[in-house]
Length: 324
Ligand code: MLT
Image (cartoon, rainbow, N blue to C red; front, side):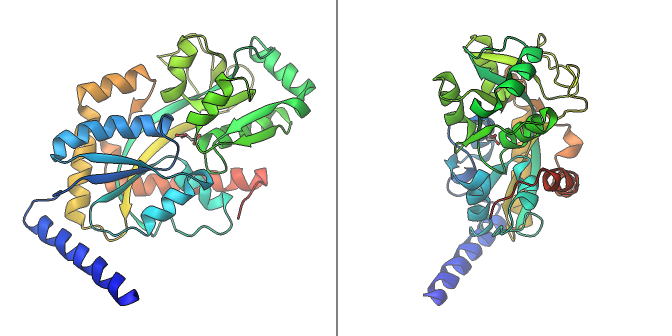
């Protein structure tokens, strides 16, 4: 059985190497794994890039949502996938924060992947259901402090940026709310719209349309400066949560051992997508910022991931919330 699996992997890699040598990769659809639910913010970024990359690669880039454990089911799946150039992964800050949040991760973010490119940076927003009693940030702080035992905070689980931002908010206020984990903020947003949960931090790539339609209450953005797409929204920092900052960054990865020529070709495809006017417009409309070209190299992504692991480790350990 083991021999058969090894042979299949070997043949897959040999075929990939041949296709690469002949300059023919990709000869079939390429999978881009997304670690959270369809329809949510990571999925929106992935599908926008995939549509553009499908054109430049001449093969469909198929988005596959693999859910669970705050993104870690997908990360582990990709780490163990064949390094044949047909599996890629898009993930955000969770690739760095999970290292500190989980005691027994089955993959190593710094050893089990090839680094393709960074993509976009996305602000977060602090929201509540439409009929939540607090009408502005000051009222929110007062209400949350007075009613902490009955407030639900929606998150996408440990490893998700919604959880990280929610944890920082609770810590800033010195409260502990009831966290309700979903398999992505897509379903969490549905629960917020349906009034089943009270508050949530989520990325503008999902929240801008709901804010503009008046379906949720908005208390502020998590960037240090206001964001162009929501100019009326003050930052949490300027409203008194000093130095509160969460910016969601995205990286594209491949399983360790994916041939360098394929990683480089994929890097070119991601960079081309980030310059595609349709992608630029969609990202602009949703408040996402396309990262500068110089940070889109495999080396820059690897260095950024390392810096983020070093940055968030102490913050997370001080929070004292871990999972196995
Ligand atoms: C998602 O795509 O559902 C979000 O990125 C999850 C999260 O909050 O990290």
